[in-house]
Amino acid sequence: MKGPGDQEDLRSLEVRLEAARQRHRGEQGKPRRLIDSNGAAAGFRVAVDLISGLAVGVAIGIVLDYWLGTSPWCLILFFFLGSGAALMNVIRTAKSLEAERKRRLEEGEKG
Amino acid sequence: MASDSNGGGIGEELEQQVHESPFHPMEQFEVRQIGNVDIFIFGLDLSFTNASLWMVISAVVATGFLLFAMRGSAIVPTRLQVVAEGLYGLVASMVRDNVGNEGRPFFPFIFTLFVFILFANTLALIPGSFAVTAQIVVTFLMAILIFVTVTVIGFMRHGWHFFRFFFPEGAPAWTAVILIPIEVVSYLSRPISLSVRLFANMTVGHVLFKILAGFVILLGVVGGILPLAVLVGITALELLVAVLQAYVFTILTCVYLHDAIHMH
Image 1: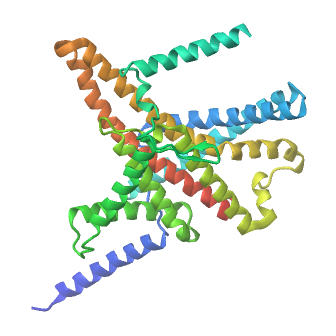
Image 2 (image 1 turned 45 degrees about the vertical axis):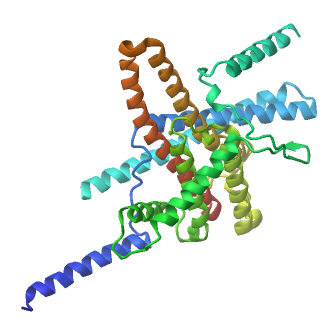
Image 3 (image 1 turned 180 degrees about the vertical axis):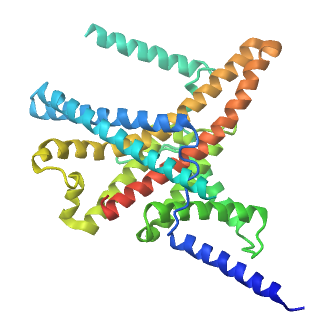
């Protein structure tokens, strides 16, 4: 028998379709599930960011000193620039992790 | 001079130890030539090694898996098809969320990258296999490839305007003297952090395996039960790490791509 049940089914289908379309358009960003699912991974990410910034700075300093014969001034300069870059990296990573956490919290309140 | 030769001595001694003992934790990372066909191109030794073999295996298994899983392309998917479509969906949503619609042309590249690293990482967990992603050369080559590609895309999209990327908007002009070098160094550190993260995670995991397995052998049937139990736990953890690191590598590629396309 056809009745109001059919209408209801159609409507719920419509709602689900719309939700799927929205997801597809990317208007509701799906939460990234894995990235900070454990603290060790986040900690490791930050540590690597810190070290790589400093390492690149020091490497550039040593190479420039070698080329220009200005030892040790470029090393000293780029040590500090590398430290700055390392901090910048860490701040950026921390910000993105924090944004993610917040988004997941909001997502959790809704769902 | 003296310290120099001393350092070399220790290095050689260590190398010899690694060569002699199959139980040395670093022995598993040794790249060995397979067969005796020497391939030299422009003086570079490009002979086929165990690393090459496992990269080929990763690529073949990944391609074979996807082709096999999608062979039916049924509307009601089989179990394997769900897995393959899940992988596709995961990367698709990753690209959409992190790069936006402009990221679509790069989806094949990012999907290939993710699947290759995922299979290389997980295949490395099979006893007796070779951990390709625990070789810094491999991860660094992938990272530098991504770095160069992304930088080229940035310049193609924005021309010389891309240099604005190195100066944060709204900062006072005089801070440029400090901020621009810092930003440049930070930008240059990207391929290092990207490659070292994957490499270090995989290396640490596999060294841990080897050491714990060594304990099991040393302590015998009774005493070896505890390290064996730990080893089982670590294996589960390493499976998580393998998947997670493939994911992190890919998501950071997306983030860098986003930066190049949208500039913040």
